[in-house]
Amino acid sequence: MAIFGSLSDRLTESLKNLRTKGKLSASDVDGTVREIRRALLEADVSLDVVKKFTAAVRERALSDDVNRALNPAQQVVQIVNEELIEILGGQQRRLEFAKTPPTIIMLAGLQGAGKTTLAGKLAKWLRKDGHTPMLVAADLQRPNAVTQLQVVGEQAGVTVFAPEPGNGVGDPVKVAKNAVDEARRRQFDTVIIDTAGRLGVDAELMKQAADIRKATNPDEVLFVIDAMIGQDAVATAKAFQDGVDFTGVVLSKLDGDARGGAALSVASVTGRPIMFASTGEGLDDFEPFHPDRMASRILDLGDILTLIEQA
Amino acid sequence: MAEARSWSFGGALRNLFTGQQKRVIDEDTWDELEVALIGADFGPDITESVIAELKEKVARYRTEDYADLQRMLREGLEERLSKFDTTLKLTERPAVVLVVGVNGVGKTTTIGKFAKFLTNYGRSVVVGAADTFRAAAVEQLGTWAERAGVQIVKPQQQGQDPASVAYQTVDFAKRNGVEIVIIDTAGRLHTKGGLMDELGKIKRVVEKQAPIAEVLLVLDATTGQNGLMQAQAFLESAGVTGLVLTKLDGSAKGGFVLAVQERTGIPIKLVGQGEGIGDLTGFTPHVFAQQLVG
Ligand SMILES: Nc1nc2c(ncn2[C@@H]2O[C@H](COP(=O)(O)OP(=O)(O)OP(=O)(O)O)[C@@H](O)[C@H]2O)c(=O)[nH]1
Ligand SMILES: Nc1nc2c(ncn2[C@@H]2O[C@H](COP(=O)(O)OP(=O)(O)OP(=O)(O)O)[C@@H](O)[C@H]2O)c(=O)[nH]1
Ligand SMILES: [Mg+2]
Ligand SMILES: [Mg+2]
Picture 1: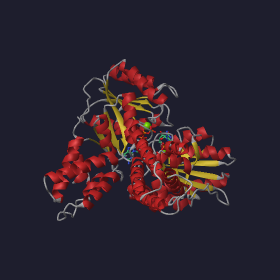
Picture 2: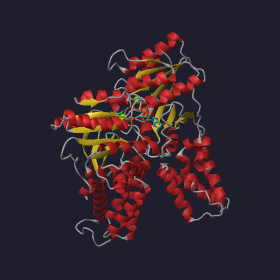
Picture 3: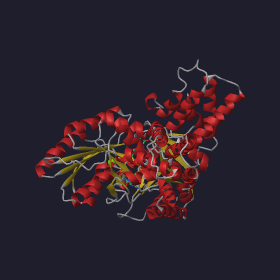
Picture 4: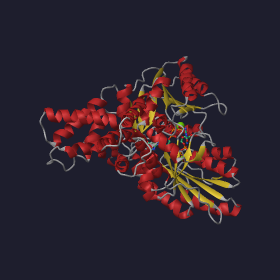
C-alpha cells in the first residue's frame, strides 16, 4: 500500500547501491542495516528484537563468512533472509499428540485474537484427518461465547461440551476438568479447550488460565496472537509465557496486509515455535506456518528477492 | 478514571521523567525517548518528527533541563492531538451511528458501552444487529442491549442482508421516535474489497431514510502500524468521521492513532478501557497527553 511503498523502494534503492560496488564496506552495511531496521520497525517488530537482529546481520555481513559467489547486495539479502528464517523457523514442529488419548489442546490469548474461530478450524482439520475432536466451552465470560462456540462446532461438524451457559455463569476450571473426563468416557481422541480472552496485565484472569492448565494437563497450549499486533507483542507474549506457559504459537488474521513483525518478536523472545497461520474467517482458512513466506512478508523481501534474481 | 484502570499508556513516557529532575539532557535522552515512543507504537515517522521537533526546541531555548523537556513533549503531543474536533455530532433525529472496523477490535462491545453511555444522558437508543455473518454476533449484541437497557432490531432470518437490517433499525427509530440508532457491522479486513463495498451499500441504504451522523471506526490499541492502513481503507469505503480506541486497559499504548489522526484528519472520539459496560469515555487531548507524559 501507498504508505509503505516507499519503504520497499528505499530498501531496494539502498541495495542497488550495494550492487554496483565491489565488496562490502562497513559503511555500505551500515546504510543497509539502517533501512532494514526501519523496515522491521514499520513491520512492528519490537525494538529490542530489531536491535539484536540488525546487530547479528551487521556482524555476519562484515565477517569472512559471506558467500563470495554473490555480489554484495545479494550477500546482504541472503544474510537477512537466513537470519529471519532461522528465528521464525528454528523451532518448527507439528502438533504433539498424547500417547494415550485424549490429546488435550488448550487455547489462550488476548481478547479478539481469534481463539474461538481457531477452535473450530482445528476441530474441522482434525476431524478430516480421522480424529474425533470435542470442543469445550470454557469461556464463560465474553457475552455469548458459548453460543459462538456451539455455532462454530456445528459448522465443523463436531461435538461441543458446554455444560454452563456462560455470560458470567459457571466455573471455567471445572468445565475444563469435567470435559476431559467426559472425553475419556465418550472416547473422543482430542479435546480443544476454548478460553476467555484475557490481558497480559490481568493477574486474576491469568491465574484462571493457569488453573485450567493445571486441571487438564494439556499436551499443547496454543497462544493465539493477532498478526496486526504492534510493539505490545513482546510484553503480552511474555505475560502469557509466565502466566500459563504455552507450547506453540498461532498467528491469526494473516489474510490481511499486516506485515506481522509480531511473529519475529514472539518467536525470538519466547523461543516457542509458531505452528499455524490463521488466514480467514472460514473454518478452512488455516495452514501450517511457513517461516520462509513470513520472512519475505515481514521485510517485504518478495520484491527484493526478485531484484536479486535480476542482478 | 480510577487509578487502577489508568492507561499503562501513561507509564510509557512518564517513566522517562520520574526521578530525573536533576538529570541533564544528553545523547542518551534521545535514545531513551526513541525507545519509549517506538515502544508505544507511535511508529518510526512520528517518533523521528517528535524527536527532531524537541531537539530543535531544546537548542532554541538552550535548555538542559528535564522538566523543560517533559513540558515540551507534553505540549507538543497535546498540540498534535488537539488539531481536530473530538466531539460527537449527534444532533440529527434520529442520529444514526454506524460502527465499523476489522475483526475482533471491540465493535460490538463498544456499542453496548456506548448505548449505556447515551442512556445515562437520557437519550433513547436502538441498536441494529447488522452483523449477520459472525457466529452468535446477533446474540452477543442482544446481551449488550439487555445490559444497557436499550432496544434492538435483529435480522428476521439467518444471514439476512446487513443493509436491510440497518434499514429496518432506522425505520424502527423513526416510527418509535427513538433518538439514536447504533448499527453494528461484521468485522472485515480492510483489504477485502467485496466486504468493504458492502459498507458502502449499508450507508447508501440507510441514507435513503436518514443522514448518517457518525461513522465510527474502532481501532484496537494493541494494533501496530497496520492501524494506518485500516484507517485509510475504511475512510475511503465508509467515510469514517471518528475513531474509537479500545483495549487501553492492557499494556498496549495505541500510539499509532496519532499517525492515523495526522494522516487522515479523523479525530479520536471515544476511548474504551475494559470489558465492563462503564468502561468507555470521551477523548480529551490534554488528559491524554498528561496521562502519557506526566
Ligand atoms: N480475517 C480474519 N478474521 C479472523 C481470523 N481468525 C478470527 N477472525 C475473526 O476475528 C474475530 C474474533 O475472533 P474470535 O475467534 O471470536 O476471537 P477470540 O480470540 O475467541 O475472541 P474473545 O473470545 O473475545 O477473546 C471474529 O470476527 C473472527 O471471525 C483470521 O484468521 N482472519
Ligand atoms: N480488555 C478489553 N477488552 C475489550 C475491550 N473492548 C472489547 N473487548 C473484548 O474484545 C473481544 C472482542 O470484542 P467484540 O466487541 O466482540 O469485537 P468486534 O469488533 O465486535 O468483533 P467482530 O464482530 O468479531 O469483528 C471481546 O472479548 C471483548 O470483551 C476493551 O476496551 N478492553
Ligand atoms: Mg472467543
Ligand atoms: Mg462484533
